Image 1: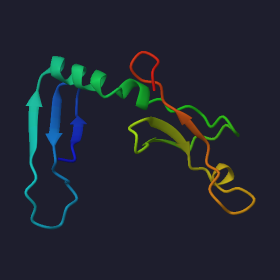
Image 2: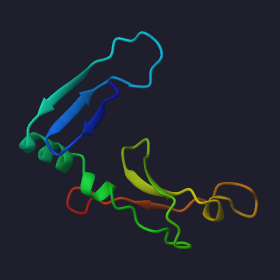
Image 3: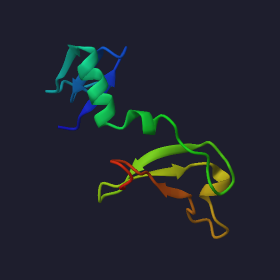
Length: 106
């Protein structure tokens, strides 16, 4: 299952595999649960506080930063500003910075 999580109002959690923009008949599911404790624990588990505060690009100070995940599971910030993204040879030279989670480990 490719999970989707939505915390609506610090109490309402929607979790499941449903892609709300799908246009085809699918066998996906979304469960809605209510509970402040569960919502807080889920946000903590998913490092929501960390992911809501992207840094400025260390190269030129831009704010076109998004979290991405490498195939080895390590999260990193990536700058998508055109100034940072393209090098002189036309190849991607995007600024990457690992995101530290779980008490300082990547």
